[in-house]
Image 1 (spheres, rainbow, N blue to C red):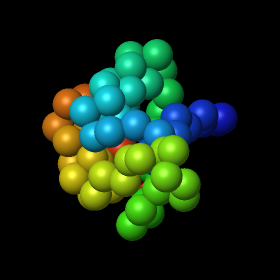
Image 2: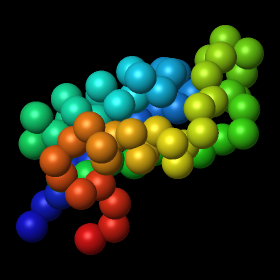
Image 3: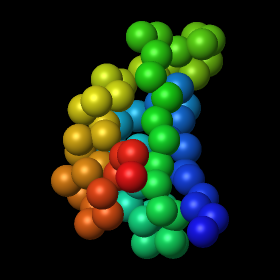
Length: 70
C-alpha cells in the first residue's frame, strides 16, 4: 500500500500554522506527516524555528490520526 506524507516545514512557518497544516493534511487523506528539526532557520529570510517536539505534540492533539512511525 502506498502512503504519501505531508512535510511540515518548520523553517517556513510558525507553530500555529504548522498545526493547522497538519489538520488540513489529515482532512485531505495524508497518512502521515514529517517535520524538520533545526535549532535555527537556514537563512535569515526564513525566520522560523519552533521546537519541533512541541509542534508535533500540538499536531497530535489537534488531529485524530496517529502521526509517527507505524
